[in-house]
Length: 260
Image (tube, rainbow, N blue to C red):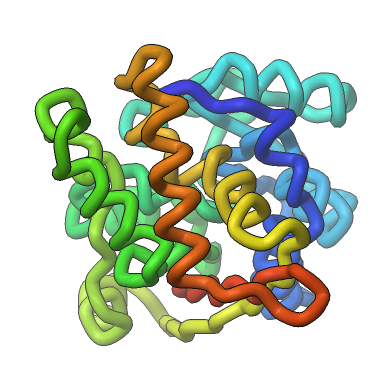
């Protein structure tokens, strides 16, 4: 998939708030080495560096565009182009890690039953895996894009689009998976309500940077424009505007803090 730093940072305050909330739960921990998985344009890495200013920090992402944006934003930190599934520690930033942060990224990586214990194994004793994942596949915004993708003329081209996101298991499943390898596991779910200006257009702009990518990337013009136009009309029905013209978009997120 292609990722646009400009689109992503258009709603930076809203996208960064969950990582601030996640890092706030780690206050007071001793962190010497920290890795930010799926660092994007560096907004989460910046929050990580502010929370632990003495830590050596490595940011990784599979998107060259995102890595380039992160390096421009935080030139004093180290960033590497890598997929989470095949991430290797660079020689100048060896593990084990005191903190592995995965903010809004693991929903794009499959096989959590294998992945999360593998990430835990890279932690130092007492280290922490801190995860935040959008848990919104059952929200109208995402049900509608899947339903539209199954209709003509999109069905053949977008047959695999819905599989790009990993369906999250319940909090109980993650707790049971991680507890045997951990001293403590905290799991919680928070729903943020984001007021987005522009009504349905604001919702579409928000999702063009993330959830819509698997549906838009396979389409050529004018099919992409047609998909967006039809999707916008569906969103307008599902999310009636407030009196000021904005939409209050519910956005559930799942949080995990696992201490090895």
